[in-house]
Length: 480
Image (cartoon, rainbow, N blue to C red; front, side, top):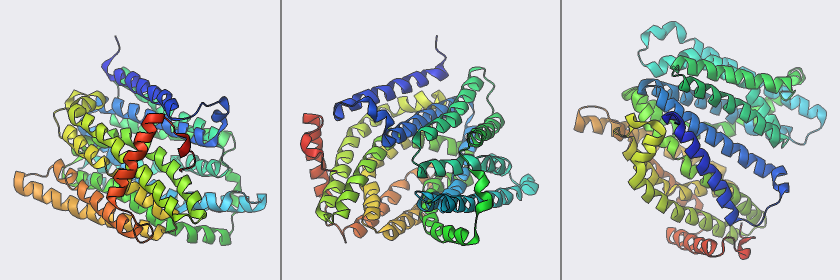
C-alpha cells in the first residue's frame, strides 16, 4: 500500500511523462541529437526543477501545519526578493560582459562579479543579522524564521549562484542540469525521508535547505566551476562598469519580484503565516499553465526577434497575436476543468486539511485570470523585443502600484464587511493588477504595433484549429 503522502509523486510523474510523450504529436520526428541541443537541455532542466518543486511542496504541505507552511513560504519569499537584488544586479551583467571575451578580460570580469556578489550577499546577511538582538519583539513566526535563517541560507547559495551565471554565459547546460539535480534532488530526498518517518519540522526543513545549498556550492567548487580564484583579478574600472549596467536590469527584476511577493508580505502582515500557506497553495498549482506559457514565450521571442531584425513589424504583430491567442483559447478548457475539480487538486497536493479553506475558490479565481496571462506576458515580451524595455518597466511599476493599493483596500474592505481581515481581500484584488498590466501594456504596444483583442482571439483560434487538424502544419515552420 502506497502511503498517502507519496501518491501524488507517482501521479505527478505520470502526468509529466505523458505530457512529454504527447508532445511528439506536435513536432516532427526527432533523433538522438536533440539530447545534445542546448535549448533542449535548458528545457529539461526547467522541467525537472518544476517537477521536484511541486512534489516537494506537496510533501511539505502534508507534513507541516499551516503556520509552519506559511512561515516556510514567507521565508522563501524573502529569500527570493534578496536573490532578485543579487541576480538582477549581476546575472545579466555577467553574461553580457563575460561571454566570448579573451582570457584576461574574462578573468577581470569574473573577479569583479565575485567582488560585487560577495559584497551584496554579506551586506544583506548583515542587515538580517542586525534584527536578531531584537527578535524578542517579534511575534510573527514567519518574520522570526526569516530573521534567524536568511543570512546563512543566502550566503550558502553564493557560489552556486555565481557558478550558474558562468555556466549560462559559457552555454554549458549539461553541468547546469546536474547541479540543479544535486540541489533539488538532495532536498526532495531529505524531505521524503523526513515525511516518511514523520519527523518533519520547520527547523529541520530550514537546516537541510541550508545544507543542500552548501553541498551544491561544494560540488561547484570541487569541479572548478566557481572560478573563485579570479577574485584577485578584479579591477575598479570593471566593477564600476558592471555596477553601471546592473542598476538598470536590477530595477525591472526587483519590481517584478515585488509584484509577485507583495501579496505574501501583506497577508503575513495582516493575517499571519496560516493565510500565507493557504494562499500559496493555489499559486503553486498555477504551474499547470506556467510550463506551456514559458515554452510558448521562448518560441515566440525567437521568432519575433528574427522578424524585428528583418524590420518586418507585420510579422512581429502576427506572431504576437498567434501565440497569445492560441494560449488564451487553450487555457479556457483548463479553467473549466479547474472550476469543477479545484477541490480535488487542492486536496491532492495539500491534503484534506486545505479542501475546506479558501484555497479551492482562490484557485478557481486564479485559473480564470490565467486565461488572460498570455496577452499580458506577450505584451511585455514584445515590448522588450522591439527595444522598448523602459515601457515594460513602467508597465511592471503600474502593476505593482495597482497590486499594493488594491491589496490594502481589499483587506480593509473585507474587515469592514466581515469584522476580520480575510484572504479573499487580497485574492479579489488580484484581477485589478492583471487588468492594469494588460491596459498599460496594450497602450504602450499599440504605439508600435496596431492590433485589437478581437484580432488576437481570431488569429489564435485559426492557428489553433490548424494545429489540431494537422498536428504540425508545414506552413507554420517559418511562422515564428
